[in-house]
Structure formats: structure tokens, C-alpha cells
Length: 195
Image (cartoon, rainbow, N blue to C red; front, side, top):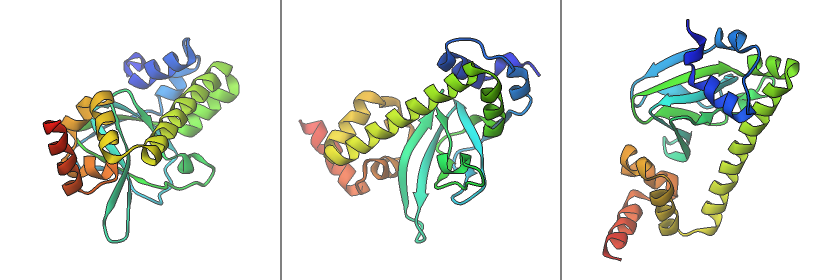
């Protein structure tokens, strides 16, 4: 297998700011997954110590209540990295589920293999630290928007910052992500078209 074809190598090397030694050992453990729309990547409360890179497509990260109601915490699309942070802990379990929105290609990296490289090479530690910092910044931004912006402001933020997302996800999923009902989202969209 040609290890230079992994999207994850490009992303992690970019985060590190240089080439990553020991890449061939990590590449041997990477699994490329080709999934159809609506396939599950993982469910809540599973042992799943992996990082994922989205090569193509879009996934939704969500909480599912016992009654089946979904709360979408975020979406990840091309060149994004996602993981359940809780599942990366020793004996940790996933705290949410991930389902594909579109046909999707993912690269699955065992977190243990990345940690082993980070213990040997500071550049790997740098890549992981910067990746986690970017993840934390996205999470902080999402929390701020949910706590300080109105639903209409959150909708307009998505339109301006992630216009492709509006075309890729269902209106029901977009409403869940924005924290409103589909009817409420329809009202926001109608008002936006008039304004």
C-alpha cells in the first residue's frame, strides 16, 4: 500500500509543521472505510479508541435519547478530524454516536499508535496538541454560539461560515444542530428571505 496517499498524513504533518517520522508504522494500522449515507460509524457507549479523518463526505456527531430523539452536536466534513474524547481515555467509552449524512470515505487511526509515536517523537506530540487545540477552539465557538446567539443568528452564522453544510444536510438535521424545531427553522428561513 502506498502510505503517501493517506489524507491523515497530510493533515497531521500540516499540524506538526513538518514531516512525521515513523509514519509507515502508523499507516500500517490505518483503515480506510467507505460508507453509505445513514451508516453508523460508531454508537454511544462503545469502546472505540480511534481518530477519524473525513476524506470525502459528511458525518453528524449526535446524542440519541432513549425515545429516539437526536441532538446533533456537530458535523464533520472533508479534512476534519473527529473522535469521542471520552473513548480515547484508557478503558473509555464513546459519549455520543456518529452517523454518515452522505456517502462518506473515512480514515480510521488507532489512537494508541499515535500516542506511541508521540512518546518517541516530539513532532508527533506537537501535531496531536495542535489538533486537540483546534478541536477545543471549535467546541468553544459552538458553546458560545449556543449560549449567546439567537437561533436566527446561529442560522446566519452557518450560512456565512459553512454554506456547503446547508446544502448537504437535511432541514431536520440542520434544525437539530441549531437547537430549534424544523418548524422553527422554516420560520427563520422565511424571515431571512423577506429581510
